[in-house]
Amino acid sequence: MIHSDSETLAATPKAVKAIADTLSGGRLLNIQSFTRSGTYTPTPGTQKIRVKCWGAGGGGAGMSKQNRDSVSGAAGAYAEALLDATLFSSVSVEVGTGGAASADSVSQDGGDGGGSYFGAHVTCEGGSGGIAGQGLAKGGEPAGGNVMMVFGQSGQGGTYASGFLINGVGGASFGGYNALPHVSKRVDDGSFPGGGGAMGSYVDENTHYASGKGGDGLIIVEEYS
Image 1 (cartoon, rainbow, N blue to C red):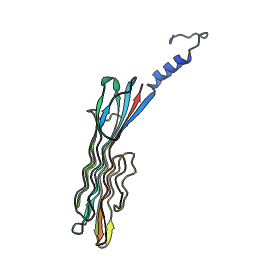
Image 2 (cartoon, rainbow, N blue to C red):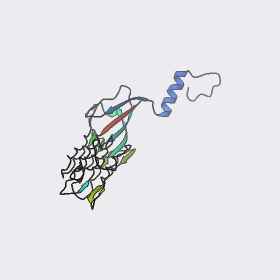
Image 3 (spheres, helix red, strand yellow):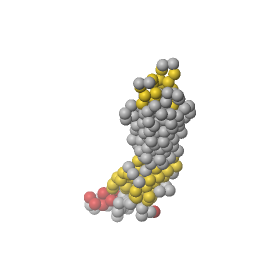
Image 4 (cartoon, rainbow, N blue to C red):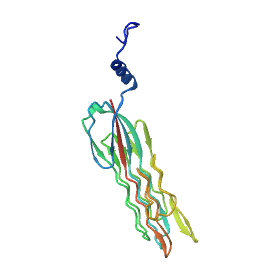
């Protein structure tokens, strides 16, 4: 029938829909989001999946009276891949946790962000924690993406000298709004998903702030027929 040039026969709505689905590569069936580790099981009828993966961000480093140099946390990597869902019945999913923050008036490194993994198919490293001192926190590296791969942005350093505070910025994650470029007060954590936490600060005897924690990772699976 698909080769017919008849002008007297008409296709049914079902047949037209089937052709449209074939030409468009399948319709969206479902979206599964993972904010913590677990197992992905394809929805019945799924032929292809689009995986979006973010590694977690690193926590910002603290600053003390004795050491007034500090570095914000770096962002986790991002990767995106199209996969044939008929090749597996389930996939182990690991979602990274954001790196720990540092307490106020304490000079210590921030915690590293955890990596996120969609089985062995897609890997997104977490961002490094900020450094207590001078340096640059390293952003996470991606692997396995066949659509897009984005390295996490490095965390930037800051210092307090001669009465002026220069603030480091937490690394930006793909699609996130980034850690804010100022001293950490209350909730200046890395953006979700995967942003680096802002550095802490020690301004004077009465003004000092803790750093922000890194943003947690995330994995989103779009399922297509």
